[in-house]
Amino acid sequence: MIVVTTDSIPGRQVVATLGFVRGNTVRAAHAGEDAAAWLKNMVGGEIEEYTKLLAESREQALDRMIAEARARGADAVVGLRFESCEIAGGCAELLAYGTAVKLA
Amino acid sequence: MAYADGELSGAERVEFERLLESREDLRRVVARERELAVLGRLAAGPEPMDAEWRALEQDHVHRAGLGVGLTLVLGGLALGAASLLYLLWSAALPLALQAGATATVVGTAVLLLRALRARLRTRPLDPYTGVRR
Image (cartoon, each protein chain N blue to C red):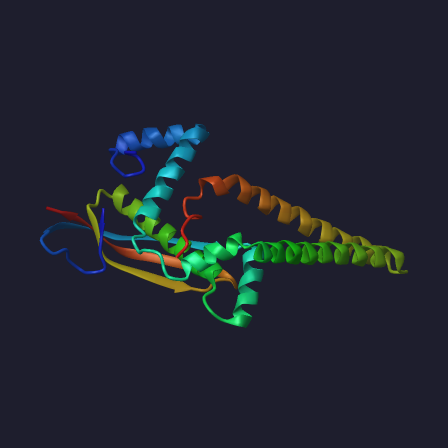
């Protein structure tokens, strides 16, 4: 599955647009990670616990979007975008979306 | 694995997904394949501070600090909760208040244990826990 942020794929021809596909998730760190993050927030630097949380959410949302594209018989997803918002404190919500297409 | 790579046809996928419902060993294999696929697409190399973080994780003082800190915090919380319940029941308070507060504490603990049990059951099948950045 080819997944790109651009609207087209150089060297490949889009023969059909299968529609909008998306995947989302909301993940949380456990209380111990939240406590560690709170302490790191006081001394500065990267908060690895939250970097990891966001990365896990990104990959899961991406996989869910790809699964939907596969189920529709797509060869690629173009115009990939990520959206994020905060639903609850300490949670990461990620929405990945794009357009599923069939390639020649 | 053809299923994890999305290479099965529609009918084959449905059949395999039916098998997944009843076969825990297959679910674990799929989760492992997905984990490898996710880690495989994270192509960035290590960063300079990674080695230092690994060294810190092995450092005895650093590890002891985590153990002592966690023990004190969790022990303190448990002791505090037990003391509050003791004070609640030893004071001359209305029975409804004592029972209500105790039910809230016990109910919260039961719900927390339920959530923890669900997480422990599903964590081995979560292919994203190995993602670090």
